[in-house]
Length: 147
Image (tube, rainbow, N blue to C red):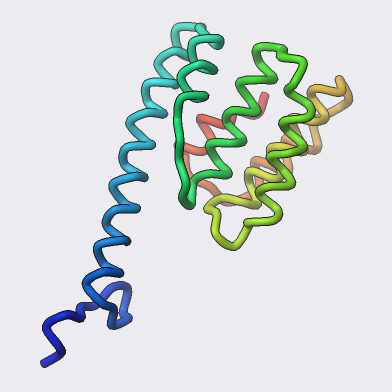
């Protein structure tokens, strides 16, 4: 029998404080998904500016931060914002610096490469194929669309 203040989290014995922090992050992730559903609702009504404003209001620190940043870059590109190219480059650098902590980092970096080619109006077929070949979930693929 273990100590009363320890429990198992992913096969490791950890303290109650660590479990609480883990659960708090899970709640943040769930809240992020609810906020992203609202953004996707704006986008489905073809209101890209509303979607951009809604995603700008999201403050999130966690494993999906790179995904949120790549989605924001996509919305900037779709709205033809002049800051889009610089933002795509910043997002790509951020994801590369923090790739160990972020989920879907390879997919998001490849997507940023794809967006950069689209914004430069260069052939982007190969870059899109590279993005689609990387592992991800249906939610990520449907949010970060490759045309």
